[in-house]
Image 1: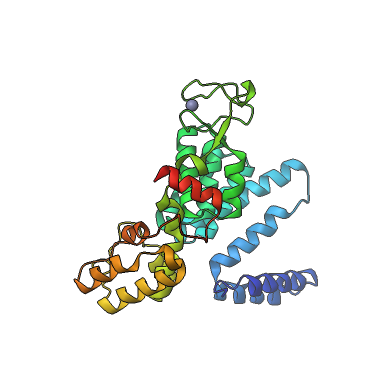
Image 2 (image 1 turned 135 degrees about the vertical axis):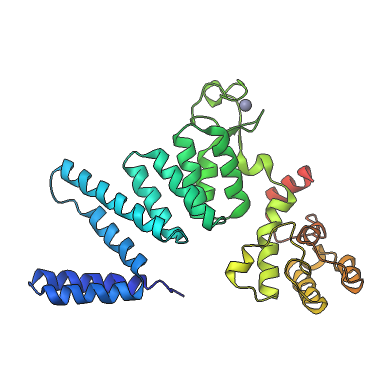
Length: 305
Ligand SMILES: [Zn+2]
C-alpha cells in the first residue's frame, strides 16, 4: 500500500499548476498546502522531479536550475534522513550533475538509516565504479547480490561488471587489458572473466533471503523487524519467540523446502528449549534435494559448500 500518497500529491500539484495558469494564486497555494499536509517530503520529491525535467531556457539556465533542485533536495534529505527515497533521488541528481563524490556520500547517509535499501546499494556500487574505487565497488556489488539476488538492477550490474577469475577483483572496464588488482590478463587479452555472483556465492548467500521471507511470514513480522534478521539472529533470545512460535517457523520451513529440509534436527532443539539460529535453519537445507533452485546455482552451492 502506498502510504506516502505519491499519486494524490502528483494530482494536487497538477491542480495547483492549472490554478496558477489561470491566475488563481490563492487556489494554487491552497492545493499545494493540501499536498504538504499529506506528506511534505513526498511533495518536495514531486516538485524536484518537475523542476528537474523542466527544459525551458538556455543550457546554462537549465543547469543552474538543476543545481538549485539538488541543493534543495539535499536539505530535504538532511531534514528527513530516514527517507531512503529522497537519498536515492538526490544521489541520481548529483551523479547527473557530475558530482560523483556527492552521489556516493548521499548513499552513505541513506544507508546509515536504511542499511538494507537495495536501491541505495546499487547507486553506491555505481558511484564507486565511476570513482574507480574498484575494491569497494566489488565489495558493494557482492553485498547487493547477497541482499537481493533476484533484483533486476542487481542482475544487470552483475552482467555488466566482470571480475578477474584469479583474484575476484572488478575489472576497471569491460575491455580492460589487465586486472588492476593482481595484474593478471584482462578480457582485452582474451582472459576468461568471472562474475561476482558465481565467484563468491555460498549456500548462505543463496538461501538467506528466502529463509528470511519464510521466518518473517511464519511470525507475522512487520517489515522493519524483518530487516533486522541476520544469519546470527537467535529466534528465542533476540526476537523473544516462544517454543510454539519456533515450532511454527520449523513447520513453515518444512513446507517451503519439503524433503530438502531436515526438520527432525530442529525439533529436538525446540524440545530442548534451545535457541534457533537462522544459520542453523539454512544448514538444514540440503541443496542436492532442493528442487526449487536453478541447476547452475545448485552446482555452484555444492562446489562452495
Ligand atoms: Zn586480478
